Amino acid sequence: MKKDGKLATFVNPLIRENAILVNLLGMCPVLGITTSLNNALGMGVAVIMVLFFTNTFISLIRKWVPNEVRIPVFIVIIASFVTMVEYLMKAFTPDLASSLGLFIPMITVNCIILGRAEAFASKNGVVDSMLDGLGTGIGFLISCLILAFFRELLGTGGFTIRNPFNNELLFSFLPFAEYKMPIFVQSSGAFMMFGLILGVFYCIRMMMDEHKKEKAKKEAALKKEAENGAPVKEVK
Amino acid sequence: MEIIAAIGIVAVLLTIFIIGYLLNKKVAKPEGCDDDIECLECKNTFCKFNKNKDDAADNKEEK
Amino acid sequence: MLEVFKLLMIAMLTSNVVFSLPYGVCSYLGVSKSKKSAVGMGFALTFVAVLASIICYLLNKLLVLWNIEYMSTLCFILVVASVVQFVEMFIKKFSPSLYKSLGIYLPLITTNCVVLYICKQVVDMDALLGGLSLTNSIGGEFGDFIFMLVYSIGTALGFFLALYIFSVLRERLQNAPIPKGFSGVAVGLLCTAIMAMIFMNGLVGIF
Image 1: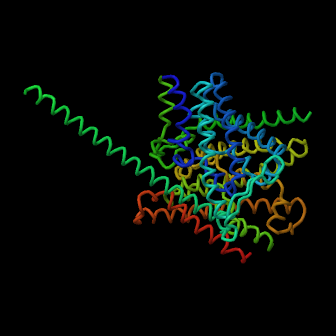
Image 2: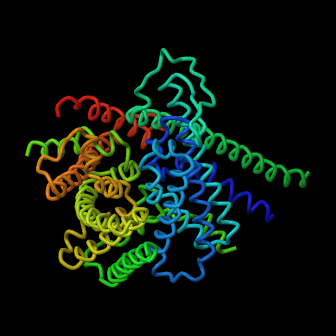
Image 3: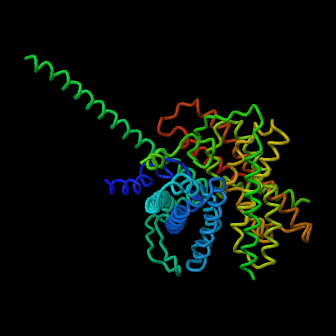
């Protein structure tokens, strides 16, 4: 049962309460960085690192922070970790950091991080908070990758992946380069693609919910039949 | 020297923020403001008017 | 004077925060269910953005003097949060009617991307003006300050404009026959895509 609890803490923010596709939180960077798979991967990894470290740290010091001043303390902790991650990226992956631009400091005001810190990390233990941070971060990364996949495919005609540490070309697959639509690499294409993906996602969720409801109805009807059947049988 | 300046300026700004935050809490809200605005527009749990509380976290706390 | 006017128009229309370099989409989608909330959020954001950008501009000169520019993210966000708290306190004390209309949006501006974006951009006015292909026609420190003020007012008003147009659209969309999966945010984003095309690509030759 304990394992179920831990696994649920990890999987819940990944799928059922995905920060971007379900809760619509923290969308500020998503539209700006999904111009290519490289950028989306870099930003996703940065957010996972920040979430992991802030969740762990906040859950470690949660007993000693007076309740009135917890928001200022959280803001200082998150901003410090974001500055650390920003300068690490500028040092080790300079091209990635310059193409992400001002989106890395914007992680500080991302609703996801403050939301998870206040709703989860300040009330639960260290291991639970670590798992929750990892799960939320990986959910964010997966949604960014989905959006970046479609935008790069339609916008440049294929995929180009570069090594972030020294900017070598690792993999370049451009089958449709002649038919590319550069609007998808700009912001209006971003809004279009995101709206379409959200719409399709909601339709799938609605169909799944209806399927579950019908299943539950059938089971309830069968149960009722069994209850009505049993007394009759006993009389016989 | 720079480290002292850095820590100093963060400490000053943090003190100003905490003073402002506590003073703001003390000042009473003017009458006529509805405190129970039913706002379900976004799931920003950081906002004090948000009614979408995180049920999973609360359940865990009870256990 | 012409350069100042050009900067205002470019910051508001051609290089709109929400449409062309997407920042602030979170609150743009969250606070636009009705016109009233859009107007409240817009005014609150403009007020806080202008005040916070002036303080951050001056604070950055101090940080550069002491060679601790790496603290800028942390210091700016503390400044923005303090400004929000003090503004809320003053409004509560001196104008309760104003608090009724825009008081609930003030805490939301602490975690708003637009305000931090403006603060981060105005620290390097030369690069900013060069990027928009303008020059500091007034010259000197005073010219820098004027251009900085105009830029922050223009950007905040651009966000206000985008938010207001979107709230009007959403009020109309509620009565439209849209398939259930797409209604709500998804169709709003598709409308935003069209608006982004108009603002970015359509108005580009005017200024």
